[in-house]
Length: 226
Image (cartoon, rainbow, N blue to C red; front, side, top):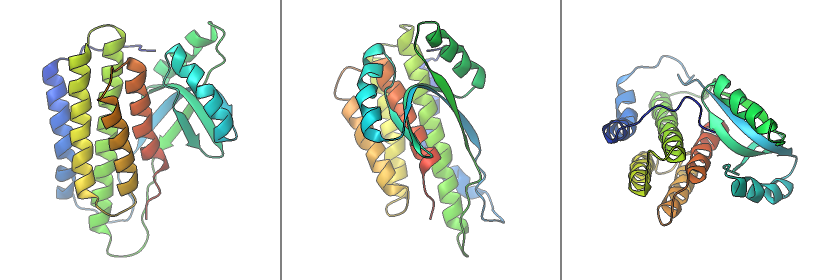
């Protein structure tokens, strides 16, 4: 579940962490003339099962986790997807999906374009800037979790490395929480922080980092801006 893995040094992790802290501040330097947010990313989820209710999906997620997949239940549209992993390139997702099919796991790829975020009304330029910063920072944090999962898979990272990444993500989320004390992001950010903090208490597996990665992506694609 880790095609095209690139080596990540502790220095690169530190730099990425700094970016995650500062990107939300830097975005305020930009000017916006409209109500559309300048954010566009595509996520490719490898899914083991698709169900029309959370209870049915929940009965499968544990088995996926035992196998080594994320097991995160992603609600999108009218369906619940039991995810194995998530990628930022279509070729990576399709390669993993085909590999799993050869092992008699009937997987599929769900492609989600996160774009065309808009806010209505007047006098919302500051809110637009804040929300765009939120989305970009969350994407950076999801990428940190993804890279850590790959490094754990190949044995490049140990527990100390993984804990360092977790602490970096916690720091990024804490910064977002402070900047979003009472808006549509607030509840989701606190949820992600709790998930991340719980992970930091125990042994961290690559599937845990993939689950965190997808949880963050879930917030990005399903956030209801208001």
